[in-house]
Length: 445
Length: 74
Image (cartoon, rainbow over all chains, first blue to last red; front, side):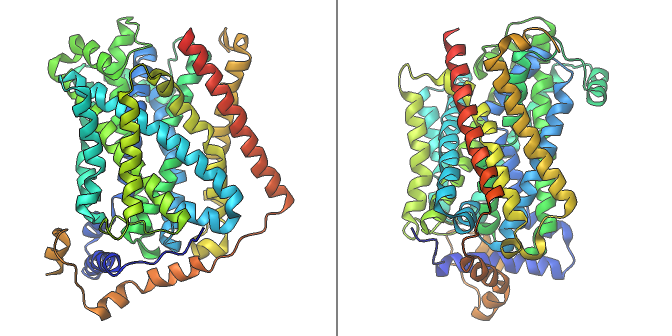
């Protein structure tokens, strides 16, 4: 294994051009232009995490609990995601290295392999569910399964044709903006905005109280915002894009804007499906297309079509970003070329992993009688359960002066980071208790 | 001119050598520093924490699989 990677002339040139534009905008004092040029990794990671299973979790939350506790809770999870992702901005800018590379360099192959297994397993399972979402969203419009999964793989493969990080990022960001369609769907259902406001302030009501089902959805909603691939993707994207120490402020803004926009889309999805709870429709086992169909009486044909479009988009964007995070990690660990600024002939392994994992996940979705439902149930939960070690390594790296230098975490950021780690770990323990001792959660506490 | 080159991903990329050296100086320094990083020895406490987190993941994933199988057959 070699962690040394030679950068190509073309990759350097592309990055130099991007830097040139940023420095020119800085010299001219055009901060909004600087932000526009540097934004991307944060917005993409947050909107990418509003993926197929996440939107399904939010839809299930809205349909089972309505407008109440889960609205502010989802905002809280995005705040926690911001705390974790901000660290990757500093690490990527300070080291120009990916997350996997730093773990292997600092903690060795033994611990690095554990982190990689967590990443690859959760990434592949999540990718499968992204294609499930793509198929479900497309089925609403009568698009056949094979056409839908092929389109998904084609979106992932767009990196091959673009071989420019900037172009790939802008294309994927444009696609990711469709995540906002959940907001007009919510408006079309004519929600009680007063109840939304009260829920945001009071964290209530929570129909049914804290039972096993609540805990599972709680964990699924945490898993819908905080997962290992996000750390690997954003740090890799920050270094591929070429952010430096002086760009950290804009990197934070990028991440905060991404968290805010993604939180609005998530809230839109919960509010949009809340009428199913009000009208006592049993949506516990609905898939994405069934949710869209069920919304017709409340949001109209256009509203339900927008919902299906949102689910389709969520799957497409996440399949692209998750595949890229797998390819970055693969290249970093093996010391192979891993940049979207390179043409395929200069980074064949990187692009092979990028398209290969997506094609494999797409293939799994096409297997008849494959237990996709079980994968969908498991994916967000497993993502949360593998998060505490990932946060552990993140905090270790963010406090290692040899790695991050003067950008190491302050006391406040460490308190927040440890808080997020403890919260995620405790949520997992409560979940385990619901499995081991279900009687404990049979009645409300 | 640089703007046009950047917009068009298929166009050949070019930037004067001295400009490239200037704008990528910080990157190259950061890369060199990263490549020279050595493995950090883990003390007993840290090793214990990492093993604890690993055990946590294995136990929890087993729980999640059990729960999913139950749910699928329920």
